[in-house]
Length: 181
Image 1: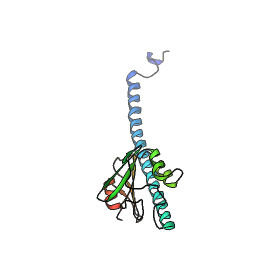
Image 2: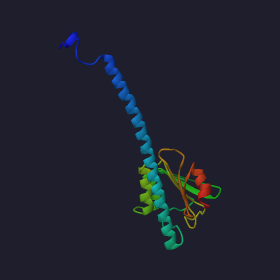
Image 3: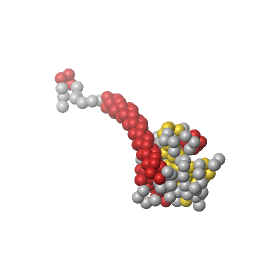
Image 4: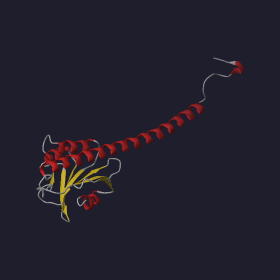
């Protein structure tokens, strides 16, 4: 089809390539922003789970004077390495890292509130749910829990038996300061 002055209607190849490249750049910027927001949302979900965990432990302590009813956990765990968990002790702190939902059932008992929170944390993208105590006979008087953030490997939310809930840069920091809060 010819128009006035003999030119064809439509876009040139260069014009199309410029528009496509601009759209590509804009979409990559938007996707980067969305991924950052998604990571923050996952971290917020972990923070909420940490608060729920603290509440459950505190309710148990107020009802029974100890934390033993929350978990079927007894330290030291044998074997130290099982399906979905790894346990260790260092400087009087006994801890287990749970990274599969089957371990949540093993440590908290099927259908318990602790199991539900543990599984919820792992489903929300946390790499691990770590629980520990200063006492080798269950959670009698002290505990600390570390819930790792999905968006920032290594850092996470730490809850302790004194009721404190804070961000920590590592699991080790949680168990050094968290249990003694």
